[in-house]
Amino acid sequence: MTDLAYLGIVEASKLFTSKELSPVELCQTLLKRIDRLDPKYHAFIRTTPELAIDAARTAEAEFSAGRIAGPMQGIPFGLKDIIDLAGIATTCHSKLFTDLIADADADVTARLKAAGGVPMGKLSTHEFALGGPSYDLPWPPAVNPWGGAHFPGGSSSGSGVAVTSGMLPAALGTDTGGSVRNPASMCSIVGMKATYGRVSRRGVFPLSYSMDHVGPMTRNVADNAALLQVLAGHDVDDPASANVEVPDFSAELESGIKGLKIGHVRHFYDGDLEAHPEMAKAVDEAAETLRQLGAEVREVQLPSLQDFTDCNRIILGSEAYAIHRHWLRDRPEDYAQSTRQRMLNGANISAADYIDALRWRSRLIAETDAVMAELDCVITASSLDPAARLDDAESLERSYPRQCRQPFNVTGQPAIAIPAGFSSDGLPLSIQIVGHAWHEARVYRVAAAYEQATNWTAQHPPGLD
Image (spheres, helix red, strand yellow):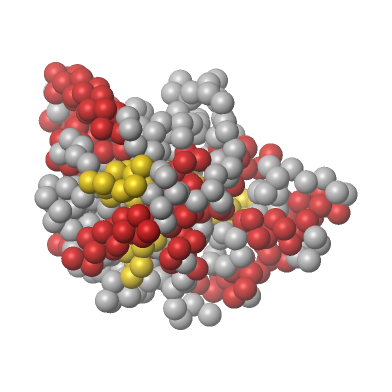
């Protein structure tokens, strides 16, 4: 079971094709693992075993007939529970939507199903992708297997937990202020926020229309690129979806990084804010590793982290409040306390403040583009601290602004979080790699080179088997 639990997308696809492994066998093995582990780690809102077994049997029949749609055929996946799966409730981890049944698949769900993916269930989140780990909701918050009592990051918490614990090889999260990359950082997995507009959000409950992204979460870089390949593409029913060519995201994975120009945004975590010493050391060492692999790495200066954070906060707060204002008026008691307070903060942002923030955003994008004009990508921190304990409310609250992910929701650039080792307490450390718009393949190239040089993504939480 352990070997199958940590089998990746690319590996499993090869075994399916050679008929050394059955999609049904993998599906059944992971369903048993979920039954055993999830009562402690709370990754799932609900599993969908009937749908999963049916999809696995269909995939098996396709392999037997020699029909292979791609690397996701027969691969189990999970959906953050703000993403629609037809016939299943999309709860948003909230009392408000407990019985809200999706009448159609989200675009990303439909793409995965069409590619032969196996839907295993809906994954826990912060309420409406905004609140925090809350105990005043119908489902408990997810728990990080690294440490066993720690925050797994949010808001795509269940997605991070399911992937790192070997319950799933792949999951989808969403990212508006870092919510794919945060659990990737806290759970020692790989999480990509592709360019804004690269992946459709149709059928995904919105938080901030102008900054929401859907992103793939996997245990290694090659799997992440393979999953994004299925998700990406134009959707005429998502106004933000871009009609741009979808390249081969895996094309540069084995190219190495010799001669690439990489900016090191050190001031985010050693100046604008001060990272935990072990996290800062991990990012600095990662920059040195990239230099040793042949890249030209130099420190660069972007606009201040605080500028990006404030701009993100105003836009997100305004747009989230606009979406929720009717429920906040009519059913305020059905929100978790932490969610309700965060939502209500948006009521105090004026229209003038919102318009000013949109103009500010344009300036921040232009300034960032100017710095990156002669670079292939930049490296910086993702989180500034290792995971806090779930029972340490003060440290948890402090952790939310202590991150470097929001700048790239403001700019819309592709950004990936990948493992970078472990703290002295055995908690994951991470780095973030950011590229030019529409150049995800280059980001994956740098991430793959770092992964191959360090092998951090091969590590799994102890004590689960």
